[in-house]
Length: 89
Image 1: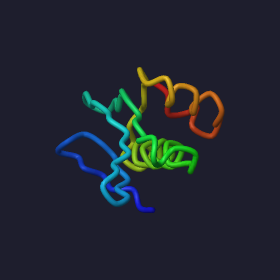
Image 2 (image 1 turned 180 degrees about the horizontal axis):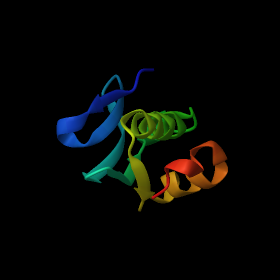
Image 3 (image 1 turned 90 degrees about the horizontal axis):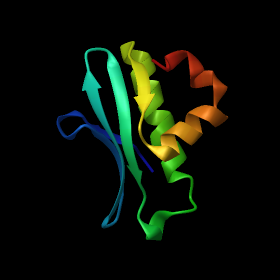
Image 4 (image 1 turned 45 degrees about the vertical axis):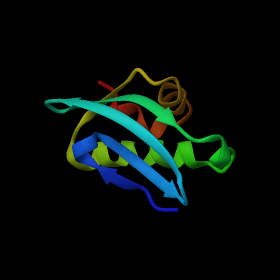
């Protein structure tokens, strides 16, 4: 399962058959704000949301961005993964 970055749509996606899981974001200057994580019922319980979150945060780190979150999933992910604390704006 591969994460695809769609910068024009400001999202990271995992596509499995007709099902699309996504992590949406906005960006101002060097701040990436994660706004919504969605995984269809058919794909839940497979670690897909976590894979999207990790990919989004690694992308932010590579680009030198700081991050904010208004997404409950991403906020919880950041709390559980101290290795990303340095990215928070």
